[in-house]
Image (cartoon, rainbow, N blue to C red; front, side, top):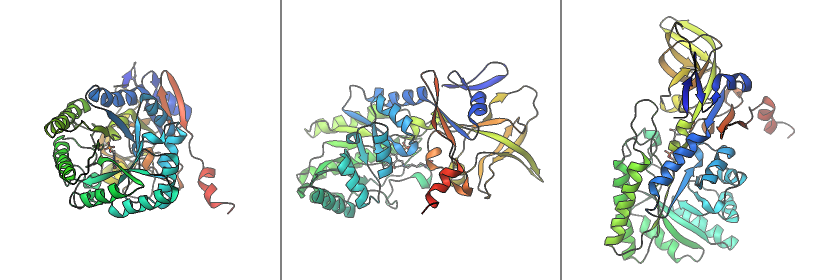
Length: 423
Ligand code: LLP
């Protein structure tokens, strides 16, 4: 909504800021984000739950971990879903409280658990029995009790790309429903573990809400079973995963899904004579995905026998999603000029891989030197970037409250060499 063409010739803007001027001023490749879009997306979650239950929206840091974006979200009232010591350090650097963080991930190391306990992390979302034992040992050694939730695997099909589907039996995530009671019993009996809640996350880029309801049914059935064993759970974390529109998808809106999920939980609690549990959600992509674009300059137009290539200065190392998932991202020139000749191009980067493409078979009216915007690049863009081919990572800009702010400098070759020199 905050991305639009204005003027004549039509130039792409985020809020008041003309993206062509930003590309000229800061260079390309360049990520540009809209603060207003991020706030609106966050508020669509917060408002959807308002007055219905006690809910924390824990933004999934992996989607976009720039500390200025984390600060913006912390100021809106977000909690955080983190998966590494690095992500915890980022939310601390952003001034957010570790107590509002939930720590997920299948391979937490002793060092990470120690750091998280020392910082006062809110809760561990525990993904295996072995991890539960490890957390207990570290907590006991430090003399600091750990709050734990079990991430259960509800074995539902999220009907999304297999690489981002996480709630099936064959996925590495979570603890099976069968094993969960035993792990809860262990945690319940351990003096340095405090059972906090239950967690499930079934996948990402979901465009159909029904898997959430299937997963919730299974989680509630498990809570009933646990109650018969004297284990009472007072917090439910239902994960993230609501999709965004990249092309023509019509993902559900938080306002369509969250109140219905909450209603179902309320009904269950009333029927079984329990207090309404507190809740959390862990959205990532739907908060930042459509708030960001990647600007890239066309270096050459090249014709092979049956293909036209627009060779641009961004590559798979900047935006991995097309190479990794064959993901679709919209592409548009920043300036729409009438009568400019168009052709069908593959938009490709300079990296030495055939998989290095950003878009395929797009009709574009472009010339060398023009700048393109790769759309919907705010989530899993910069966070998945690498230095492949010794390319420095892109700079990042945040447009917020009438201001254009550089929020990450372009990485230099000195930055890249630093870890390898003066050893
Ligand atoms: N919670 C947990 C435990 C997760 O594993 C994830 C994402 C989220 C929350 C946030 O999910 P979201 O709301 O963003 O869908 N790189 C892939 C996406 C990987 C998602 C991994 N987990 C992509 O670019 O499509």
